[in-house]
Length: 455
Ligand code: HEM
Image (tube, rainbow, N blue to C red):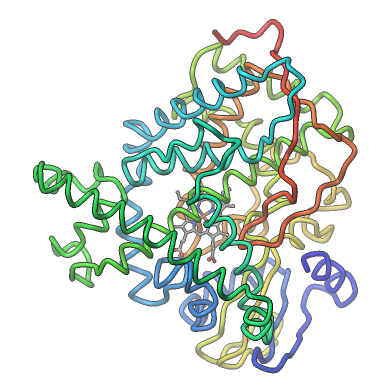
């Protein structure tokens, strides 16, 4: 599917249109200037639209990912409290270090043993446990046993896989019904929603026994508390208590944002840095930067800001393997795109971040090569050129969070271990999903790094 977008743009250029029954005309674009117009300049003329809501309903419900207008605005405003610099300094970076130590403990059990470890699975556990602790006040405990995913993680993964393509595939519903997918979706959706509901009930019970937590400064509340206390003050326009359904939607939306995206981009980063094609220089540079900045110590919010090469390794992987590989918005008010193409109400403008990351027109003749060095010179690319974190008013709320989290675990792992891909010449495929997991995970063997500065 993603490769077909790459091929179509290679054949038809930066912009082409398609039409399908039930979907209507779609305008496919990979031009940064046009996307700046759609995502920022004329933001209110484009929405996620009802089809996004219906197609993702079993997982995201009415949460921030599928919401539009005022319903989106208040969710964004509320959630942005947990992403403040103060929160990172006080708490978030510490949680990342603590959970990374648990990941190190797991790898220590298998180091130098020749045992194959799935690094992508380990990253899923790391991001879920970290996010659970930061956003919901409880670690999910996945890192205790990464080889046996919890029932929640299994149902959640299956849902993101089964729902992929629902918004863009005509007759998806009939196919899903015929293949039995609909039943599985309903079952998994029920399970993950009940799981989230139990977290909410537990919080209510603990609140009943210590009501002081309710009166905390909003910047010190976790995400769950912020949403549960909504309506207790006049901070937001839609000042009404959220229903349990809406609270569940919020929990699940943030779980999908907080777990899968970062874990999978970390897996692609480790793959790209360690395959034969990469040579040893990239990892050597990363180790040198880490040693120079950390000197064997623990990462902090400030140190992650200095690790420019680590950030470059991570962003370069996201350029080639963006977690949200394609996206679209529906036009709600007739518009004219830069260049003169008219877009009528009800039509969709679609873009593929995957194709844009590989476009020689945007990135030059070496667009298909993994080269962290390209991030080390000149200004940072605009957010419509490097579109992995979206752009405009709906740009990813968690970009800083994800970047700090990724640099923390990369620098901690790389100080302790060396990694060998089981098949360093294999070019892995991605698994169709709402995000972009590596199909088959990332099997590696782990060795202890010699002469490390880390304790
Ligand atoms: C490598 C990691 C990540 C990538 C590549 C990424 C990418 C994106 C993209 C492309 C969108 C727009 C999606 C859409 O149109 O529906 C988005 C939205 C969002 N992201 Fe991220 N994300 C990452 C990590 C995170 C993390 C860790 C969090 C939370 C802790 C987060 C929170 C959000 C939220 C709340 C939105 C919705 C923003 C809105 O609609 O106003 N993201 N992200």
